[in-house]
Image 1 (cartoon, helix red, strand yellow):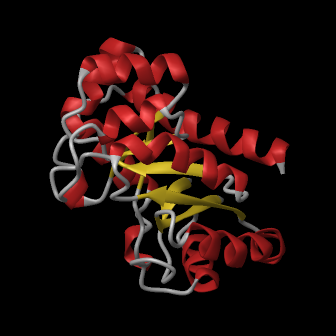
Image 2 (tube, one colour):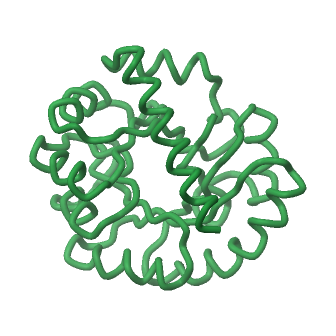
Length: 218
């Protein structure tokens, strides 16, 4: 299993990075990405402190670890430049906190994240078919969230992504150990959102392909 959306105590996660990595391993995950909430004020701090540990700790724990950020509450007009800044600082993955119904997110965030070339648009809420089509064109992955507060629009996401031929990944948005759910529960949440068994396999395959690309780049 793979989780491309994990938080530590560098933002609102419960545990230090090393312990979050250990908990993911114990839950059966083979690869995770730290994506702590970030804006221009703390991106450097997160990346300069987490990137050096990633290779060493993942080697000794036997689980692949990558480090990125989840841009959060960045004004839409600034999102493309902030994505570029995160990459310049060494972020291996750049995600954007999408327009989930469980949080106050500015209108236009989803579109700006897609236009700016984020790797993943997290919990995109009431994403439109036009936005999903652009995501498909630009290779932006759309997140189906297993986190209850962000899963309210999973059914809509599945239908819209299907029509737009956009790629979905399944993420836990893990903040503590219990968020690393089992394979059976991941599958049940995906099927419950309207995915076919083949679409579920494809979504998990999208995550594996993404991690494989990161491994080639590292």
